[in-house]
Image (cartoon, rainbow, N blue to C red; front, side, top):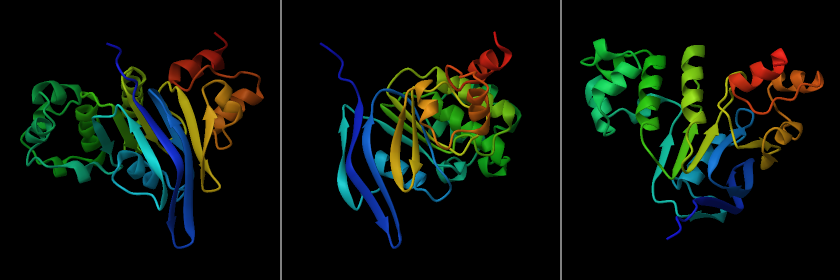
Amino acid sequence: MAVPHVKIVLRNVRSCRKNWSLTAEGIFCEGLHLVTGPVGSGKSTLALILAGLFNPSSGYVERDAVSSVMLSFQYPEYHVTGTTVEEECSSWGRDPDAILQAVNLTSKKEASPLKLSRGELKMLHLECILAGHYDLLILDEPFSSLDCFGKEKISRMLSHRFRGITIIFTHEQAIFPRVDHIWEIQNRELQACGKPPEAFLQWHNAPAMIKNLIAAGKTPKNLSPEDLMEVACGT
């Protein structure tokens, strides 16, 4: 029996609040999607709509073969339920020893999660999430509060997610995973830029490093540090 492909379809979706509005239409198929846009453009609102936690003012969302959904909020404190770091890992159904070793927090397993630094808690939270499998995984600002090492680690993990739909909403300008589709919110409307590398030419608010490389005639194949290094060094 063929395995059904997961898919999210936005049909004439519109969210309105006073003098603000967001319009979104398109299809999110399997793969890794990057959604960018300025502050206040509606990225978090769209994330909530896609996750089914917020109803649009009009239009509707179709979810095909989506049986498991995970939404990661920007601030990891929102997700904390354990009284210790070890309990927090267990609350996600994860092996605490494996998770704590991966994020170098074994010595703090008896500490309160809220006593960790924001970066430590963010890494713990993301490590727990990325150890699981979801038909739809939505990450709102996953790179916030992380140092360059943390961003690179999470990017590598995301680059190797081949199951289901993963959607990243971010302001990040330097470190990215390898993505399958790029979207941006511009003029209060979700716009599909397409697949890399062709998408880079349609990406109005692309990071400066991407624009500079293209201007120099060096279009990268994708966004990962390895892809950027390859084209920047001419290898």
